[in-house]
Image 1 (tube, rainbow, N blue to C red):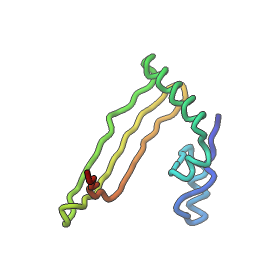
Image 2 (image 1 turned 120 degrees about the vertical axis):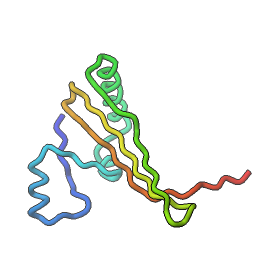
Image 3 (image 1 turned 30 degrees about the vertical axis):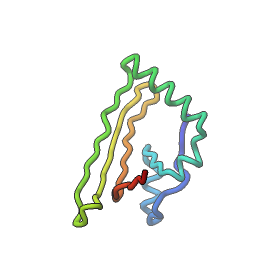
Length: 108
């Protein structure tokens, strides 16, 4: 199955967008994932990926978290990444999450 990227986020200059569309790189954010992937399709791909990993044909690395303390002791910058590759799907992917972290207060 060949995926094509329907949209570019954020909007790029048309010349840069045209160049990006020529590449075999797929950028997926939450909105694009919801448009392209059904839960059933995700489960099928995960099952295949785990099978290949069990056969030694796929690899992944442990999720990495970096927390940078902010000036306010209750706020920090958080960067998370994880990646892997699956030989049979001819794919290598990395997931990056970048956000501001604040503590959760649970009462009770």
